[in-house]
Length: 424
Image (cartoon, rainbow, N blue to C red; front, side, top):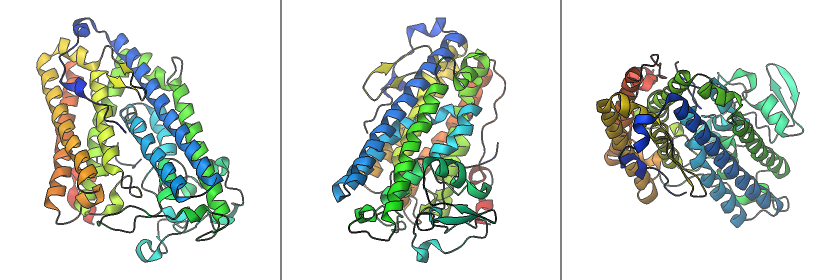
């Protein structure tokens, strides 16, 4: 998560299919009820991915090996697509947005958690006294001027004492990216090839590297189990009587507004701006979301898959089951076919750009290389996806008007609205 103002490819063939026969008969009540079902299923898939990750982590920690570490990393990557597809439920739904920082907060000052390469990372940052606190190596740390007992790195300690310690957003102690750092370590390759390369012996009690292997294992085990419990909470929140579900279903017009706000804010301020344009402007590998694993191209792609689901009401579960039902697309087709055609076309254009970005990430170079200074082709691939996201946001806002909903406010980003300011 960035604070700012106000597997298999499962998408989208649906995007180019003709509108369903139910378009003329779709009601707001039926549409939001269907989206509640999709959200519940998607978070359930994310939970199952986290459980598989937790199983792989515990197997690795029980008998540390190179193969075990690779299996845990593979499980982390496999867990990301389902979660990223949920993100369009965020910004218009305060229940989800308030919770999201537990599981997907970024960027993080990883020196809070473990050892770092000080030559590249530095030793201090004025804004964060805990920049190199290294809780794994220190059983007592100072938070807000007071000593805090860190002798037990339990889920409760990570969640309630360490995460966002001192009220500083960069003190990320839980969620996917804390786990990512513990599995990969820092990516010290800059904009060159290669991801993080943490040795498995960082967890090997018999042949320990970098010290504190027992505490590092305790931290990873706690963070992994906490991810499972946090996702389980959101699955419950999207059950029919859950708090997040009620935001969608108690007032259908409010629910539709929340969905479109989420789609628009994710498209513009969050994804196009904070996650993509900022890094492209600065040519900075630290400004990529999955920066330790070099999995960023996948995460961006699946965010767009989720936005497409927000429009079409079509979702393919991890087990291959396809969910379809009344959608925003159906409502819009009935109300204003011209805007429906416009938005569908723009979503398809962005989806094609994201598919190109994903293909480049799989076959040519990692995302941090794409945004490197002087990489014209890589920069252009990223920029084309950004352009599509910006353009589709305009049509999402037109959709709000066409459906007779209250005007939405999408999140903004200085990297889009005042790009010169990011260099100051």
